[in-house]
Image 1 (tube, rainbow, N blue to C red):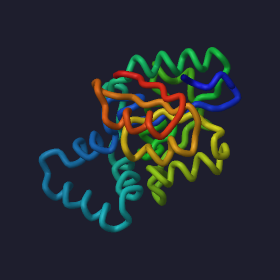
Image 2: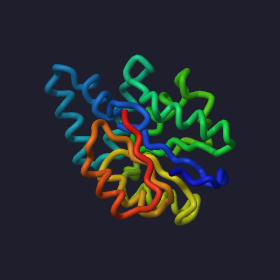
Image 3: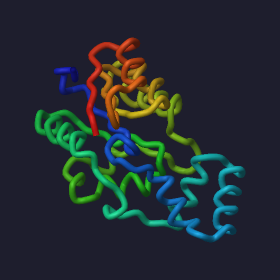
Length: 191
């Protein structure tokens, strides 16, 4: 059950939570295509400075549009309801900021996000797992945000927030069961 305190912001993960797809995988497939040299280039970017740098370089070469992803209707409905209730909504993603902004500015999402409510990787730090948890604790404080995610990488983030939300593809979900055992007031949303 989501906290009734609407002063607590709702932080939504992107890949697999708001949209079904993984933006980095989509960008890599678009960039690499059938060209082995471009795939080698992606590998070099990754080896050079790891995930955040590779994501930034892909974003410099690739544009993603709303034709590339599928919004998860149940998450969009939750966002609409919480925004209508007055809760501030943040998009918090390990994807590159360019891709996060593309989704946030898409017709179905543009009413719920602004430049100030998008937090994503920007070339230096891969905003995933513990890094994302640290970022949200710094911004809001421990136990002062609600986080919606979908993977084991989100466990450190859920542990620092309240009323965790997990988006699952199908029942039963071992991750959902694990989260319920470790956290209170878990909300499960099916894709």
